Image (tube, rainbow, N blue to C red; front, side, top):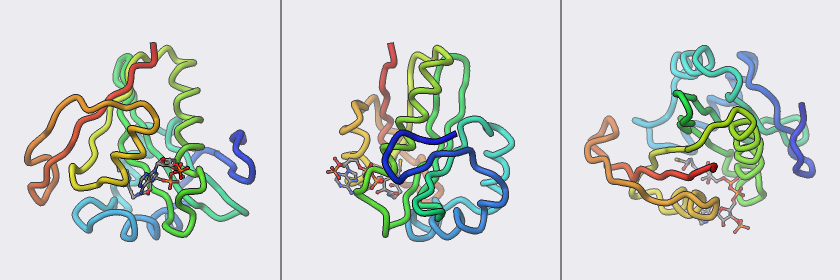
Length: 153
Ligand SMILES: CC(C)(COP(=O)(O)OP(=O)(O)OC[C@H]1O[C@@H](n2cnc3c(N)ncnc32)[C@H](O)[C@@H]1OP(=O)(O)O)[C@@H](O)C(=O)NCCC(=O)NCCS
């Protein structure tokens, strides 16, 4: 399974990828938000089909995990190593995920992003996601989330 972006290969996450994925966490998220090893394992068990990584020159540059509930996809996490950002890595992960969701007749995609994460919000807006609500006290430190969604129909 390969992605369509030049030099970026999209494939399923495997447990052997954990050490590299864990290195991306603390440099991508606040400590309270970063996934631990047990959290990676939990999500891998729950949604192995849409738990994917992006490889660039054999190195994991980013990962993405999406769960499906009925006809709605929920983006659980996406992160790209800082050294590989603004090179289309997250877009390649999203392209793959959107193609799979459309093939499974998923109608809506949702996510939450910290209201302070302006770069993240720009990324989602660029992909056609729109704000659909504010969730106060969403994060473990009491932080607020912007709920965003995109229709696939
Ligand atoms: C958000 C994130 C996943 C984007 O990954 P990426 O691989 O750099 O994204 P892409 O290169 O595919 O970006 C595509 C477009 O999104 C927009 N974008 C992405 N990051 C942006 C930023 N920091 N500021 C403004 N716009 C941004 C741009 O329009 C960009 O196109 P351009 O580079 O041609 O201008 C990455 O910055 C990251 O891992 N951040 C920390 C974790 C995080 O915030 N995750 C999302 C939480 S919901």
